Length: 390
Ligand code: ADP
Ligand code: MG
Image (cartoon, rainbow, N blue to C red; front, side, top):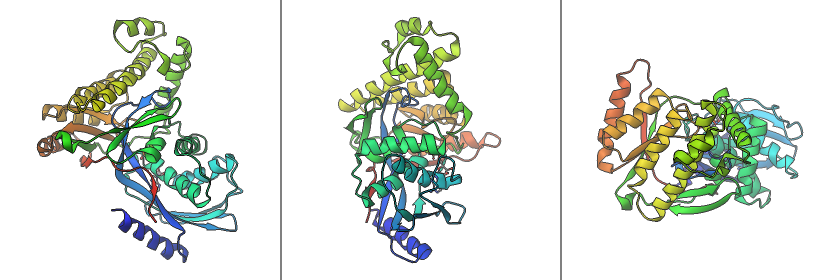
């Protein structure tokens, strides 16, 4: 299916650099079924890889020079050297491939220069993780070309470190692990504390269901203050509660949890902690439902997850809330904003026959609001994780 993509990326590489690439690799974007902002709290997540992917053609150079180009970049080839890599040394989109090289060098590997061409159909800033797709495609290409043999969960940790320390975005490890470790037809149940993982079969068609993705067309920003502030609030809450991470809070809900959280000073920290604790419980519940083949029952879990993002973690936005509410009124089984928040995409669990009605209702609700971009829609099918294409 992806061979035509690989041929195009390889041809563009030849046109740019005047020689053949040594290979073409791709890494997908993802949606997250449930488990938002749990990944930097040592918690659980349940992402699904998308058919949308970043594809890179790469060839080594023997002079330590790195040249990178993106079909979605400003046009120019960005050039730097392996020796000069240090956090912040390359700005803009090229910081992602530069970060991939930097983190492998930090990890003790000797690196050559490279020529690289990137083409991606993961939309930017839409909560579908175009950044991890890009970073993971480059890391997999380097691992493969140089024969490093780094296990994928560890490669995901390196990708996270590159995004944290080189690019400067305080993200958790979900996106990178999803991109590298997801399997076709499955959701990835990941424990971000020890990277333990299991593929949970997700056969939507067999259950007579689809996952509709609604791009709210509100761009989020990971590196911005709001994400960092949530992260710091969670870490502070864990400290004050005397646990290593919010993952370790013993109560999963109800009065018992309220009593525990009452020890935190102020409603804001209590709400942040409540989201993370209840969200971890929702991931476990979702996995149980998938294991039991009860896919329809997943709907209310998704919707409860959205309410928690909106009311406790305060990371939704009017466009996301409207998409969720409108989908539910139009008969969806469940809906929630997916990804880091403040916009991006909403996922909707529903029957295929309801999709036209739901998309029309959401489009109409957006059109009625001043200044809202028209939403975009696609249905998600669980795709394979990162791999070499040629
Ligand atoms: P998300 O990962 O949710 O899409 P991020 O803000 O984390 O959003 O990452 C988006 C950034 O990743 C872009 O601003 C750009 O710098 C970089 N990026 C992703 N894909 C590409 C691409 N194909 N070409 C150039 N830059 C890209
Ligand atoms: Mg990202």
